[in-house]
Image (tube, rainbow, N blue to C red; front, side, top):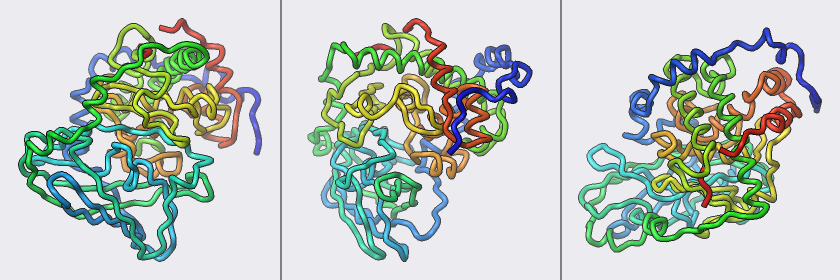
Length: 408
């Protein structure tokens, strides 16, 4: 694999860079969360519209009692598949397994959203299913949503789950489910403890030492990365289309607006919408989880391997690092920019296979786009050469700004 040690003149010359600062300042006056909601209509009101390719996984949902649900996941294909069951059925954490609707309006999810590492996954988070084989999972939907109102609730599950080769995520496999409508006893549902209650009463008040230093560096880098990505999004082009499946001005403006909001949030540790913990306050980390967010509470927490397994800034196109992980988590939090993103796909291959509406609301689409678009140098290396490069870390390393997200 070729490695570029410096920027190619074709991408780093001043004449090759189109300035968009004026355009950026003008357009950011008009793109708002309301405009993004209009652009994304249907995403929050209905489950993601995944174009299923057979073979895949089919999920059969049935009610056990009140808010307890059983899911049976079946491999409908002709070959064995191995997938990551974190953020999926058989995950014991309060993750999103189904979408809940009342009168066609989606009920707020109050659980957690992981960022997984994509390599060196441990066997305990992998599930293999032979053709026709099934797994079962029983979970309580009241643990991740407030269902105290009771009444008729409709459940659906649709999306894709990461598949692995060896211990590395190499793609995804689609899944869908039947539609299940149940009647919920609100008084009983209110008795179920859910993660929202936990978030309201638990706090860690200090962040010090090497972890504090690493997180502060990640936040500084996020300001640079998100700002550069916002400008690149406004310019659009073939690479923007690769990740977001359209070069329309409305989509470019919406993507740029989210990046600008992230840059603003990451620029201050004394104000803003999020609380960012440099360690795990709730016990949801595992050896395969880099960080997680509780979007309903605008909380982000880093896990141990965020520090031990990730470089501050990667030297490889589309590889994971601390700054990309932090940016990924910021996209989840609606307090930064609403609506918060989902995890429809992880990694380059799966993320670039999404539809336009899915990509606009997929966290990794933003992180990967930013990774490869943070400078003209990395545009050339990732887009044309498609190899590792060392320009991205040098760019960020030479662009230090005073730490200007609030640390828990």
